[in-house]
Length: 400
Image (cartoon, rainbow, N blue to C red; front, side, top):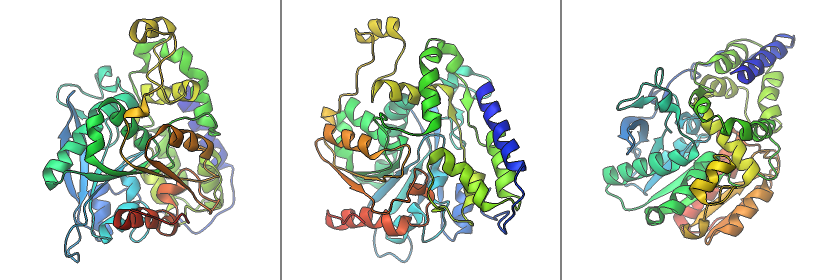
């Protein structure tokens, strides 16, 4: 894609013009895949595979209840966001990362990966490197096929009837869509925790989303063009970022600014030792169709897929795609947001809350939190996991 290539060239040109240096460099954790990263950090991780109804084979990881625990407190599923992977819940390291904290608190932790990302590039009949049909998906398919497959698998394996769901960004919208389309899944979720959730994006300040919204109408009409991979792991964009900001002594200040300029400045919630690990694991890949899909949502609201007015008339009986009907979403939600989040804007989260039967919003008093800080920030154990653990154990929480 010319746009992605150009973005990468700008990124590389800007970085190589910087002279300032700092002591950070290669991290032994930065390129380790999920199970090896967990092992390096002192945890055991299991690998599972789940096949969806439409033939996608998803990588699913488990961090079992720690041996120091007397019993399991229940199942927590952590769902990653757009362009990312399950690695997100390990990247900050022991005592700081979501999944390690839940495991330390005696929860059975399961971590799925959506179709098309680094851990889920498999299918029963399609080859992702040869068959464009592999990439014909967006958040709708992730919600309707991937998510119920992993939920059902985990509940069967653990002999449980419910699980708690912690999700970042797109992972939140997936469960909203699933419970809207298949209301029986409400009963399978004890509670959902939406960290920096995305649904309505009316106030989104993220430059990339604004670009997506501009190109979405035109690209949506050229359907077959959308069936390809973007932001893949070990692709040009990720490799450039890793080489220049994860394996050299270039300035932490500058390399962090590359991230913060896109996702919102946060005064270095992502610390110097964690940043190279971030670059080593992101991005993880998705489809161009899903990239464009979020431009549609920016334009149309939290709505069904937009095929263009002519095809929309045939499919939906109206020129514009209808909004998702959230009246069937009855499971409880706790959303966590920040005024400094350029993606999951507080005003948009409040709109989402108003559409749900059982939802609460905690806006962090710490105004330094940006979109990626909800998964990589140093204050996760101070601002986020205490809310989640308190609610799970007592049914209430104090918003920090």
